[in-house]
Length: 282
Length: 317
Image (spheres, rainbow over the protein chains, first blue to last red):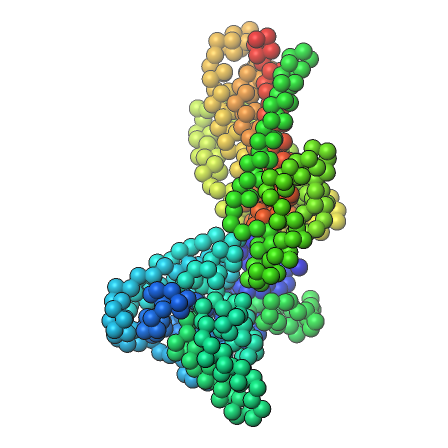
């Protein structure tokens, strides 16, 4: 197992057969690696979500209309194509995808520039200008920020990218800046909700602290009837999707590129590598 | 010999002071970076409680001055301390990396010295010929291109398009000497191109001015063979500037080739330094800084000695 810092060398090592498997290949190289002749792509549908977090208690994001305008400004379909090469599925502003138990199954919000502009006008923020903190600490971070900057510009929102060093990003930017890029690996619905949105959650990265919301989640956990429980879980997600501080356009599949001789293996889709089933035939 | 002692002894005192200053500067630079080793290791998992537990375990709660004094005291007595992150003696981490770096540096120097001497002499002696203009242009291109670009180009041509060499220099998996040659070929060539270009330019310049001087004309008129005139009379006087460049190159080979190491995924000391800075592992950063500073000081001292031995006028004064 090797950690190869330089992207070009990582791809060269795979192309020349010095390594057999490469996790998280960069989006621009996906087509080349899929086409082979010596390499192929394998995908795990359970994947990562890049998210953009807004602190709901910090101006200008303390106004729910501003948050909604930010959501309507995003073109999720295009985002998935440009940032992840189309390998993934759309989600709706909470990092929980519709394939999970208790998840919402709404169709993701469509880009609506007129609506975004109208919301900004109502909020008195027609010339909104915000600074988005980002870094190349993880794959696709710079890409999602760059694409969102362009999409937001269509709604008259000026997003200025604030590119920070990768080594101190989790320390200095994450949770602390009012507007930044973050990421999650798929988790069960309840675990994700509790991790990110309970008032006392350590990872409450949008500063979403609403006792009434906490109460409904607690109530959901204590409800024995499946349908009622599911309805309560969906209610808290609904509220987050509409009013919360997260922009979550998609869940990408966890991809890996391998040599063609690698069989019976897909990436684990978690932070932990799993090579229990891998077959190297020469 | 007296000359050598007169040069070396005061320099050693200066070297100690320099090392002390470097260690202090490095310590405060790491201290000044945001966060600490605990938050860097935990990353997104750094809740305040977990960071506090780890911080206590690493003794990061002690005041910085205490930690620096403890480190310096140990270091002076030959105890390099323990890595905060790996929880292993610093020496265990540094020595294998240093051995790798020295191996690669030796390979690069073995190729660098004859090629820059030969190219320097050829471009100076045949300076009026057309092929030298082409050669000089190539050499200039070598100087102009950043070494990691050269490295990636070499990988694309000689590892991917033509499968002659491995793209990654995984020296820790090498089993035999021919294997070692193959593994280190591309990084060695990359480093040599980066170093040779500048040294050749320096040598060519000084050798041309020496070749046009009166005493060389005198030697030629005396009927000495051109070979003897160049090697015995002209070259020693023209080596000074190239020697200076070589010293810089040696220091660079030990401490500054992290970009090349990165391209070839070579487990050298430069990568260790960058990785340790990333997690703010002060004892390892200090150890690598002391080694590279030491090499730099030593190489400069060596060059001054060599310049004196080559040039009798310096010895007398």
